[in-house]
Length: 219
Picture 1 (cartoon, one colour):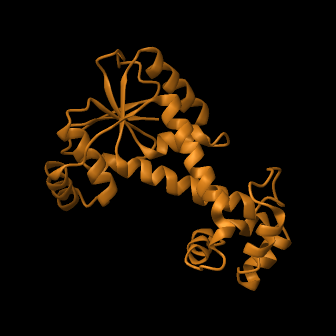
Picture 2: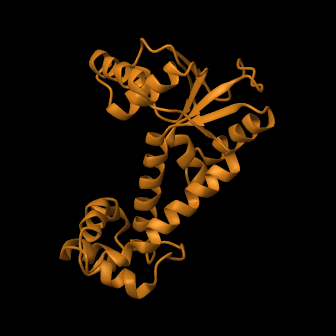
C-alpha cells in the first residue's frame, strides 16, 4: 500500500483516473465546520475539473446517511448552546429531550459545553426510533439525511461499485490478515476487485492494510 498525502503534488489527475471516495471525505464536504472541509472542497474541484471517475459503494453511502442523520439530531439537541437554527420544531425537540435521563437534561439545560459531547445521542435516537409512539418526532432527521445525500449524488455524480462474492472473499482475507473493520476491509476489497487507482480518505485506519494494492490519498 502506498500513502500519498494532501495536496497530492505527485499525482496527475485526468479522465482515466479512478477514485473511490470514502465516507470521511464525503462527510467533510457536508459539514462546513469540519477542520478538513476547505481542503476537501479544493480536492473535489480538482477531481471534477480533471474529469476523474469517482466511485462509492452501498456500504459508503449507508455510512454517510447514518452519520448525517445522527449529526443533525445531535446539533438539534444542542441548538440552545450554539448558534445553529434547529431542523426540527422546538416543541418536538423539547419532547425528545424529555426522554433523556435527568443528568443529560441538566447538561443541555445548563448549556455545559464541556459535557455536551458525553451525551449518548445515538442511543437516544435509536431508542426513539424503536418507539412506535415517538418515532415520528425523528422524521425530519431521516428526510434531511436523504436530502443531503441526494445533493451529494447530484453534485459529484459518483458511480456505484458492486460488492460481489469476490469482494467479500477479499474483504475476509484483509480482516483476518490486518485486523481491520469489516467496513474498511470491504471498501478496500471492492476497490481492488474493480481495479480502482486510489482511495480518497481522511481516515488513517486503512493504512493498517499494508498488503492492499490500493494507493491511499490521505487528506
